[in-house]
Image (cartoon, rainbow, N blue to C red; front, side):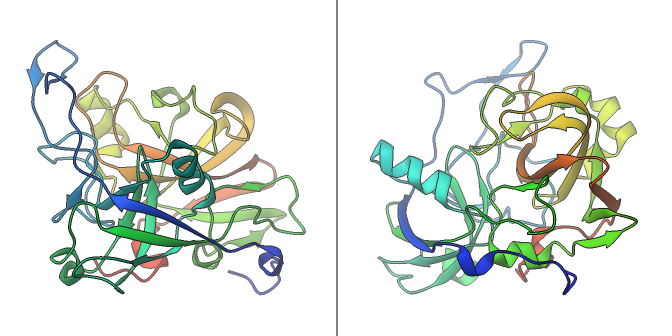
Length: 287
């Protein structure tokens, strides 16, 4: 990050929010359906995932919507909304109960639950139901000289890790790849402050042609001609920078999940491809 970029980090409010490690969830009949109608039963959302971590592949798992690391939620609806809306990527997480009490982790995503990365040794001591407290900071983060660029779910740690720089009048963010707006699917109906949008990965030949099948969990992703200020809609002349937070899906209209991090006009917000643009590196997490 350039020293000349003026963040308002001194004005941010830090708050504690908590959740509990979630039991894995399944549909009532267990089945997820391929586009041709074939049903399959696969593991995926919530719980403790031991062998999928930020920095690992997003495609190729025998799973559906696989969430890396640990998923947490709060059983009280309004408090769960606070957990979702206040927590930002890169926030510190602390285990507050159980065998791993005192262990530190880091928030890496937001899906139906909040996603937290812990070191492998810590994972072995975690249990469903353990309480995790987040030191939430980042809501309201902004750059003084770039008022037309909005940041979402961005902690001060992640802000420093982006590696933003100014080139030819644009704020440039490194990204691992670019996605075309036409393959974005489920989640367009949600507001851009909450949860993710899935890309549609059912056309496997197209995924290979675009190189999307090489995506990793934690990759930064650019999408042109989309407006993510409020919802997630098509709009020429605008760009969104997003984060891959969960793995692929067999279901029509679903695939790896993309969480909005920043959005702005294309003449002010730009990107350059860097295959290493992954938050595992930015937040100094081991892979």
